[in-house]
View 1 (cartoon, rainbow, N blue to C red):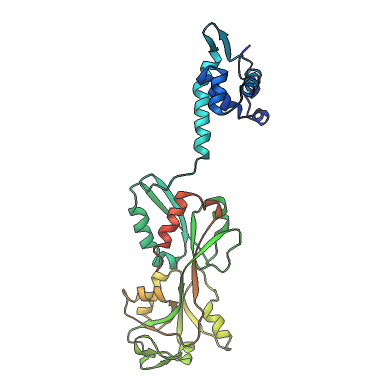
View 2: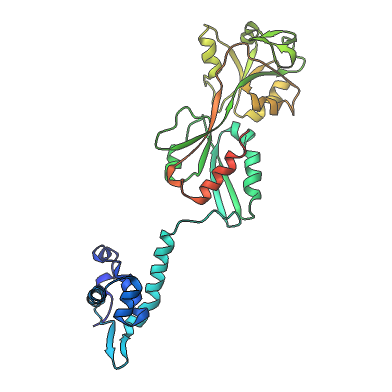
Length: 322
């Protein structure tokens, strides 16, 4: 009786020495035990022993003696191509992956905050999408500066870029750049005047804003949700002061247009403020109190360290940090 009954179930593979497939491939190629043994670096006795185990495994003699030497059985002939393909597949799986080919189809998935979307995303998108005609970029929003740990661990995201209060040790991260804060008001603001004094002297562009003026003015806050207490509120509270947030907007892109038509002051990341001042009539000023800046990091799961595509994406993001 012939067949592959002992290995026709995946669970049965646990009891099979898969090295026997290497011997079987050599035997089927050489149709001679001595030549097969020499080809794979075994002694003739070891190859003969392996042939005996293969015969038992498949329930078939595989090679039989004839006047012209050893000849494969019908089952052995049918096994030639499947065994060769299986060994080629295993060899390919163990081979180190080559560099990422941007011309190949691929979808990258990144998560960013509104801030990173304004400052970094245009350059990243231009570089990544311009690298190949079949590359897609899926961008998701990070709310409340919370690191999407679960998505990174599940492989649902390739990378997350933002300021993060804490990065778990099980994730990898890289510092991209540091950011500071400035204040922004509309041009012609009735309170802010040229030559005023801000923290440490004159403000940006020769304008100044005192701490008293700062706490008296209505404030615009960029926050995905109302009631968020931020860096400014903590710095004021340390001095026994507070501010009135007159309006909360969900996106940085909205702030310049609102500031241009109100008497509000906004304390913004400097890169965002400078970008907004290109499209709206705004003055930028130094804050009248010390405010700690923040660092922007790129975070990913170490399981993608050796993945050529993921490594390529990180290099594109790294190369466009302002």
